[in-house]
Amino acid sequence: MSRRVDQTVKDIKSLKVQGARNVAKAGVRAIMYAVEDSRAKTVNGVKADVVKASLKLSGARPTEPMLRNYLDETIEFMASEIAAVKTRSVEKFKEAVIKSENEYLKRMRDDLARLKEYGAAMLTDGMLVVTHCHSSTVTGVIKEAHKQGRELKVVACETRPRYQGRSTAKELARAGLDVTITVDMGIAKFMKKADIVLVGADAINSTGDLINKVGTRALAHLAKDYSVSFFSCAESYKYDSLTLYGVKEKIEERSPKEVWERAPRKVKVSNPAFDVTASRYISGYITEKGVVPPSALSGIAKKKMGE
Ligand code: RUB
Image (cartoon, rainbow, N blue to C red; front, side, top):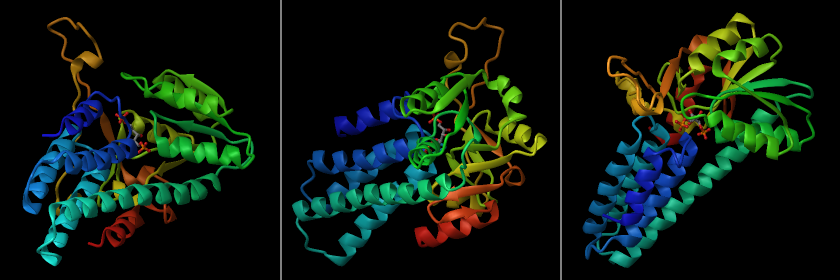
C-alpha cells in the first residue's frame, strides 16, 4: 500500500484534515497517490490497488458520503475504462484515472464557487450570522459576502471537544470580519439577535435530514425557538444515496479521551462526532444548484450523480 495513502488516512482520522469537503479533496488526491505509487504490471492490478486504497480511505471516517461518492465514481470510472479499452497500457490507464481525479477536484471548485454566490446573496448588510464548528463551505459563503462589501457580524460556537470553532473564528477574523466566539451553550444569548444560522453538512439523508457536527441539532432547535432561519451550506455530493434504501447514516463515535483525557474509571464518556437535525428544522440547503427546501435535495443529488 502507498505510504502517502496511509498518511492521508492518518491525517483524516486525527482531524489534521477536517470538514467533509477537505476530507473528500484529500481522498481524491490520495487516489492519485495510489495510482502513481502502484507497482502493478497490469491494468487490473492497478485497479485492485486503487480499490484497496479506496476502502481504507472510506473507513477513515464513517460519516462522510461526499468522500464515498467520489471514491465510488472512481471505481465506476475504472471499470468503464477497462470495459471500453481492453488493450490499454498500464501507463495510459494510470494517466486516464489521474485525469478523471483532477476533473473531480475541478468540479468541487466549480460547485463551491456557484454555491458561494447563492449563499452570499442571502447575506445582507448588518446581519448577525451564527455558525458552528468549522465548515469551509460556510466560511467561503461568509467571506464571499464580505468581499462583495457587506458588513456582517459572526458568532461562532467553540465546538467541544476539538474546538473547530476556533479555526472558524481565526479564518474569518483574518479575512477582516467582526467575529465573536462563545462556549457552545452560550449561543442562546446571541440567538435572540441573530438573523440567520449557517452550518455545514457532513451528510444529508433521503428525507432531507442533516447530519453535521454534534451540537447542530440543539442549535437548530434554538433557532426555531427564536424564529431565526436555519440553513445548511452543502454541495449535493453530501447526499448519501444508501439512505434511500433504509440504511441509516452511521454516526462516528470518537475517542473518549477527546472529551476527558483521564476520566475516573466509573465515569462513562460519550463522544459522538455528529448529530441529526430533522428536516423540519431546516429552512433550506444552499447548494451549487441554488437554495432549495430539504425535500428537493435528494432529487438534485440523484440527477447530478446520474442515479
Ligand atoms: C466538521 C463539520 C462541518 C462539515 C462541513 O466536522 O461538521 O460542518 O464537515 O464542512 P469535523 P465543509 O471537524 O469533525 O470534520 O463545509 O468544509 O465540508
